[in-house]
Amino acid sequence: MEESDSVPLFSFGVIADIQYADIEDGFNFTRTRQRFYRSSLELLERAQKHWSEETPRPRFVLQLGDLIDGFNRIHEASEKALDTVLSRLSPGPADIPVHHVWGNHEFYNFNRTFLLQSRLNSTPMSAQDQHLLTVSPGSDTHAYHFSPEPGFRFVVLDAYDESLLGRDECSAEYQRALEMIRVHNQNQDLNCPPESGFLQKRFTKFNGGLGGDQLTWLQAVLTLADRQQGRVVVVSHLPVHLGSTDPMCLAWNYDKVLELLSSHSSVVCFLAGHDHDGGYCLDPETGVHHVTLEGVIETAPESDAFGTVYVYEDRMVLKGRGRVQDRTLMFLS
Ligand SMILES: *[C@@H]1O[C@H](CO)[C@@H](O)[C@H](O)[C@H]1NC(C)=O
Ligand SMILES: *[C@@H]1O[C@H](CO)[C@@H](O)[C@H](O)[C@H]1NC(C)=O
Ligand SMILES: [Zn+2]
Image 1 (cartoon, rainbow, N blue to C red):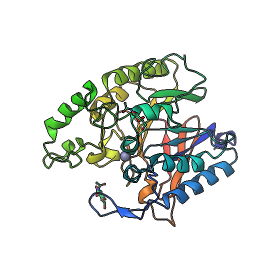
Image 2 (image 1 turned 90 degrees about the vertical axis):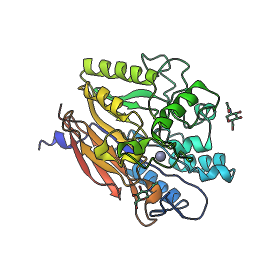
Image 3 (image 1 turned 180 degrees about the horizontal axis):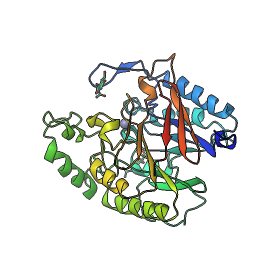
Image 4 (image 1 turned 135 degrees about the horizontal axis):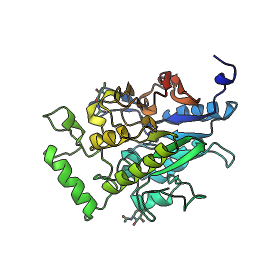
């Protein structure tokens, strides 16, 4: 390897599913996995400390969604928990910028109007009029793109654009989502996956999908990146490839998203959270790496769950800490 080759162009931090709450430890839905609600804050502190001490420092951090747990809502502690977590993630103005992805737990705590006005709206402000920056001017979808380095672009998706979460029950969006889920899931409790069908398990209330406008926008952003021969990393709370997740955690219209990604040579990686066990696959047809990051909330207090990704001309190297595995992601296109 050439000497110059070993110096990355830039790096960024990754962390998923912190789900902090000031409550006793609990379990996941099937009561098989422990959840460490309080110590998730200490794991976040260790991640932040690590990133801030790296030289050179990561350019930004991708927070892959579910920053605070839904239990905060019933304790009327949502805003307090959010302040607590954000004070650890970015304690001062000189800190590493954070890009926030919205997950189901964001919507258990807050509505879209609140989120858009909160610090969880990480849409770049300085480039408000940038071409195709967001789905449309005034859209309430939290989806945008940014380029931290010439030739590289990150696209943040809003996987709950079509969902029962975060939408008013009277809205057309909510009714559309209800119709879509009801076709596959007749359970009283829509958080219970349907019994029949393997892929149908994704039709639950804690998942969602990309709406038509967001898909059209994504298509346009990727077309532009193809033309500029850039490399694109797509970021979403929900995974879209069966090889990288339990089917219960897939986005409702994962197939549409995959089809779209496959028609754009610029896409090199899809990063997601939500499935706390994590996962990985290389899509053999497209050469896209699908990485689902192991979640902080189901990581033992003495371990860790975060990583730094070092980006080179020909690859990205994920250096995982604790439960997050190391991976070399070669650019194949
Ligand atoms: C709970 O954890 C188990 C692994 O022990 C996993 O198979 C299951 O899907 C999880 N359930 C939920 C609802 O997260
Ligand atoms: C959204 O939440 C905020 C703060 O909790 C509340 O004041 C507002 O009325 C809500 N808006 C809608 C449309 O529900
Ligand atoms: Zn989630």
